[in-house]
Length: 150
Image (cartoon, rainbow, N blue to C red; front, side):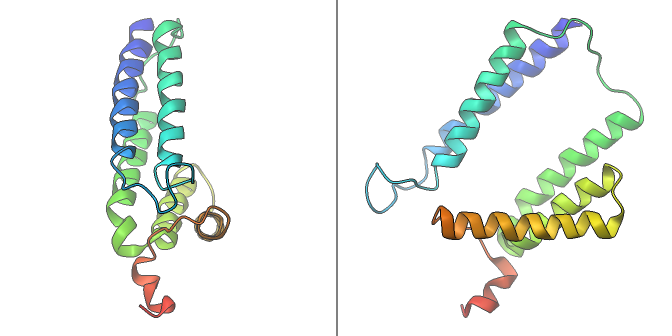
């Protein structure tokens, strides 16, 4: 069964390289190469993903098995939610898209619906404020841009 981890590790390594390359395609931020720009966070994620993938390839779990039944269905739902999140990020904006994605994932993991979506809303607002004010990185507001006066 170690082959499962190695195959997954190789796929994730390919994803890490593609994701890291995509991060280098962002335009250079105003202020030069020393400043933190929109490519910084994706590059860090790509490096962490690459290192994790290499670990899976070199030292796979000896007794893992592919999920079956309900667990496989939940994983497929999670992937579909994340795909929908990426597609809705621009039109809905970061806060609403995050509310829906995190809320749905929390609900699928067993949280009560109201608590799940409150968690999603709080996560969306907190991360938006962190990126906007602490990191000075713009996240899309989408339909909430009306509040901004645009």
